[in-house]
Length: 313
Image (tube, rainbow, N blue to C red; front, top):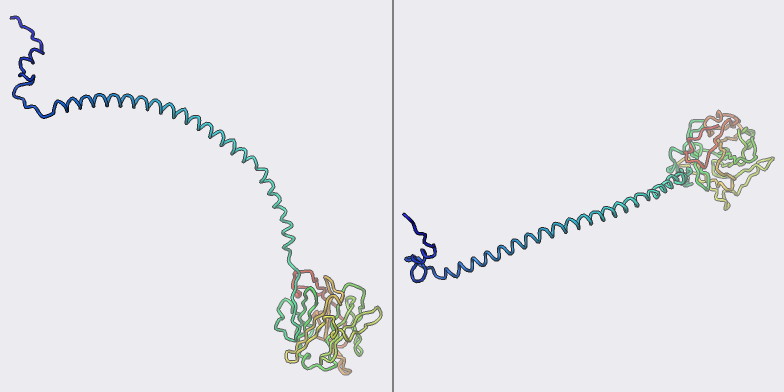
């Protein structure tokens, strides 16, 4: 049997009603408009936007960014390295730190200052301290010896300061490294030998009735009875209550520079019991009648050391 082929268009025409629609199918309102708009919008917008945007943006951005980044990185790295290396080479500046090695100057500036401790000359030993205290040959009482840049200060603490008479004396011998005498003052029949050339002797009566400076003039000890009352700066003060006497002895008048030779004692010149005692240094003599001094102190006034660290010689 032979079949006839009917064109598809004719088949749909035959099956359609007068309006070209399939019979018995409801027509939704405005469906034709909606479909037409949707198809046209979707096809046109999607294809055009997607293809054009994607291809153009991706290729352009990728190539441009790669080229730009490569150039920027290369320039930046080159400049930074060059600058950094150049600055680092200026290590020559660090070599100038060797100036700091001249700390020797700073060390010189910080050298210890000479010892210096002045006393208030008032017969009160409350300002005496251990570094300036010295024992004496009799073992009773003690002495204080100190200085500042202007004067020597000497103190004596002994019971005879309180009870002594016009026949009791304190004798202080000073040597300033110039020619002097190796024989001390003659009091009654006592005149001690000295282990150094003394230039001056300070002599004070324990009843506080007399004080003077004796200076060696090449042949004798010449007294200056006004030395403690004039404008020399010499001061003496005693307290019977404290049994203390203190002296301020101007260095300039005594010719004392950066060192001084020193010895002292107490002397009783009474006819019945002449004696020399309570001497400093403590080992310089044995208390009794007319003993000679065998040692003295040589104080370094430019040293930071305490006075009582000095060893008798």
